[in-house]
Structure formats: C-alpha cells, structure tokens
Image 1: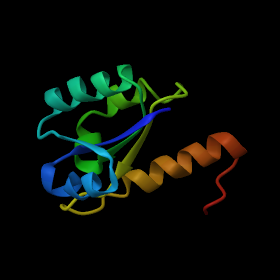
Image 2: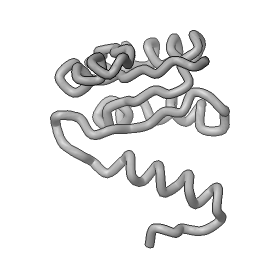
Image 3: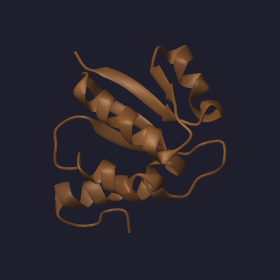
Image 4: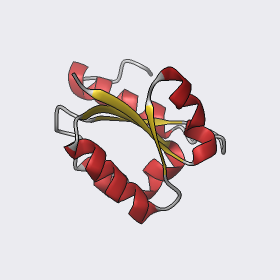
Amino acid sequence: MYKIAAMGDKNSIYGFASLGIAIFPVDESTQAIKTLRNLAQTGYGVIFITENIASQIKNEISRYNDEPTPAIIPIPGVFGNTGMGMEQVSSFVERAVGSDIVN
C-alpha cells in the first residue's frame, strides 16, 4: 500500500497531519529536491506539494511525469494560488483523452 505525503512551507501543509498524511516542511529548492527524491524512493504514491515549491523544482518534478508513482500534485499554499495545479491536471487529462476538455 502506498503512503501519502505533503511537502511545502509549514503553514501550508500543517493541516494535512490531522488527516493522517505525513508532512515534510521544506523552505528551499535544494531541500525540496532531496525530500522529493527520498519520498519517491521510499514508497510514497501520492505527494502533494505547494505550488510555490513546485515552481522552484519543475525540472525535478518532470522526472516523474511518465512514472506510475509517485503522483505529484501541486496544491495552493497560504501564499495564494498560481494556477499551476489546474494547468497540470488539464495537461494530464489532455494526454489521457487526446484533447482539452476543459476549454
């Protein structure tokens, strides 16, 4: 069974702990890359990551795009929504279906 994690700034991910999701506070890109690699190698199937951190490590995240796990899902943080998460979901749907069904 896969585990679920949330990573990003502490204020944005703190609430996930109450849902039983493992939290991994990170504040900088080098720390985020190390944490993401560790989570991917230790059985985490779903990783929620704040859009702010995700935007800093796009190249690292793209390494996992064609892998079955982990599913890396950008989420808005306390600093606001950049739209990155919705863009990614739209891209995945377009790849799966063959066309953009949102617009």
